Length: 213
Ligand SMILES: NC(=O)c1ccc[n+]([C@@H]2O[C@H](COP(=O)([O-])OP(=O)(O)OC[C@H]3O[C@@H](n4cnc5c(N)ncnc54)[C@H](OP(=O)(O)O)[C@@H]3O)[C@@H](O)[C@H]2O)c1
Image (cartoon, rainbow, N blue to C red):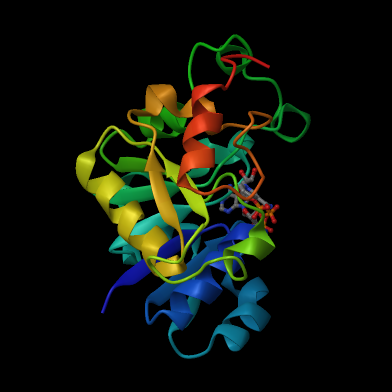
């Protein structure tokens, strides 16, 4: 039994939860307003899911998925996520999150900020360049011709390996960009951000990404 702690229960968090439960994972999911606001979602997800506070979800997970607005990343529960692999779906929308000078200047990446904050966790970028609805609708079995590919990046080999396995279970191939410092290649408005791509197309789009937009 593997428990995924999901922090954020919006478009992406709920979709990751749906697919994870379908695959046989147990899910503990939390948001900012409290577990009572997630009654409908956990009722839909069934007995393999329960709602909790964000901290409890982080503590319960064998690994975690963090999927909240970047502007709130310093609310993530550092202690509860310590020592764990954390899959980070978070993107930077300055219109929503406020301006972050180091991102605007191309001096860091969104996932590097999350990794610096969760200093004892192992952050892997994941599910950041796929529309929420497509998480449950565009996956196909391993080996399918022209299978959709998703990117990851991490400073930790075991974290990259875990998201690669999870992507495969969800129905996607993986392109590993390398360290988080390179993960700007799949951030917002780069060529790889959004469209359906196979491994070759995604690799090419990552290679031609401009550092700043
Ligand atoms: N939507 C997409 O297709 C998509 C695709 C890829 C990546 N992303 C990125 O993934 C992240 C989530 O996107 P989304 O579309 O799922 O957002 P969303 O629908 O707005 O959901 C955000 C979730 O985060 C929770 N949250 C906000 N602040 C929190 C905090 N301080 N502590 C705990 N939970 C908190 C919210 O809970 P409350 O409702 O209780 O406040 C809500 O459940 C964003 O960074 C987004 O840019 C989105």
